[in-house]
Length: 265
Image (cartoon, rainbow, N blue to C red; front, side, top):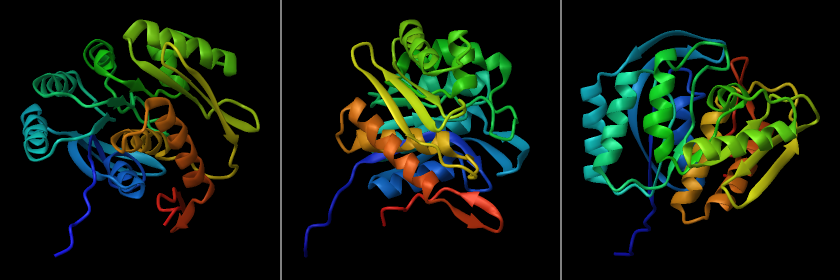
């Protein structure tokens, strides 16, 4: 019998998107596309499509703990990412779970507000995210609005991205990828800073395509590439290339723009 191939495992701790474009659904599609096995810990169920969020139902802290236990007892994840954590209780439970295991590289996508404007992080939970999760992170990947909350900086241009990346690194000790996709201009520019190396990541802006799920997909791709053994800065560069292609080759599904996760297939 021929030897079966093996592949690394990655876990996402995030919310479910019933529309399939963001959250755990986007993460698992991205993991599969880059060649890793995806596992999940569901924090919330959202009633959601690309046009809006109709409702949010949180998992209990006990259920989050049991999911973490099941994943870490059955697998040895080579990387981990967090997305929608929503509440103080859930953040405290996730932090406790991470303290119990030998935590692999952790990518924190500090999900606060959906593309549609719906709040996906309780305002009272912001301090818990800052105190309990970000100090454990290998990399944080905020967008402009999230970076403002985490750094107290208004970002209006690439130089603002650079300043925010440095402040985030100083405050929380993790590397920073500040995503500038919502800045005006012909290029979508992001800045990475890990305390030593800075990357200015730029790609031509794709016009006329909805950006639903891009943040989840970007951070999931980075986690996947880390699990495959890439260094952090290289994983970030590969993640940028992945999300750029996923947007550029997006497809239409019943009138909605959907990222093409399997562009390389």
